[in-house]
Amino acid sequence: MNTETIFKYLKIAGIAIVILIIASSFIGFSNEEIDLKTAYNQKMDERTAFYDKLWKVISQKSQIAVKNDSSFRANVNIIMAGRKDAPGTAMKWIKESNPNANFNEVSTLYKDLSRSVEAQREGFFIQEKYLQDIKRQHDNLIRKFPGSALNLVFSRDPIIYKPITSDRTDEVIKSGKDNNVGLF
Image 1 (cartoon, rainbow, N blue to C red):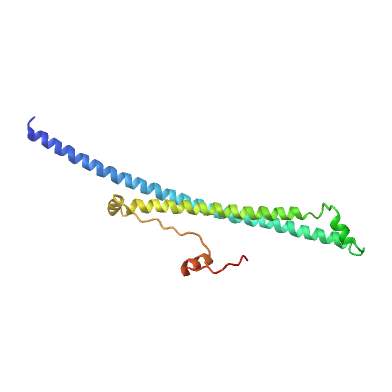
Image 2 (image 1 turned 180 degrees about the horizontal axis):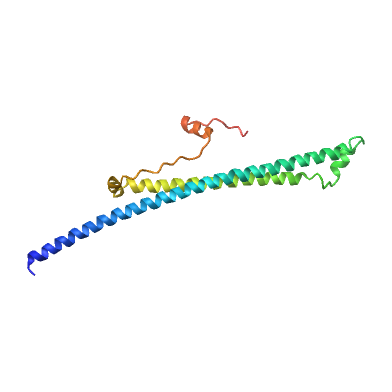
């Protein structure tokens, strides 16, 4: 083999290596972008299911607590109605250990409801953070070099993420002011 043939093969091998590196970069970019989009879509479906669960749990626990509260109130009214004619009966009743009128049970249901609301809201917030993180990763992939150069060829759209908020939150973000300090 002469020198020209060796250089020719080296040149062909060099071009093949460059093409292979570029092709593997395109494939890697495309696969990573697809992984992020499918993860995002899965988390969006999970967010929907979680939101549905959140409201059902809170609604059903609220219904149980309200039903128990109204049953407790009806029970107390029935017991007191039978005793209202006798003087000093209210004080006697207060001192009694009355199994039909246990406010602690009602209070426990409301505490459980409060914990459920807090836990469900925290879980939903974590779902939102997952979605935000996937969007951040995707944005970095298609905007940072070399992904930005590869994205010129593939033209991948950014993920559109919209957090679930309330009108009150939207107004605070829009105005930059939160003057509502009342609890209820």
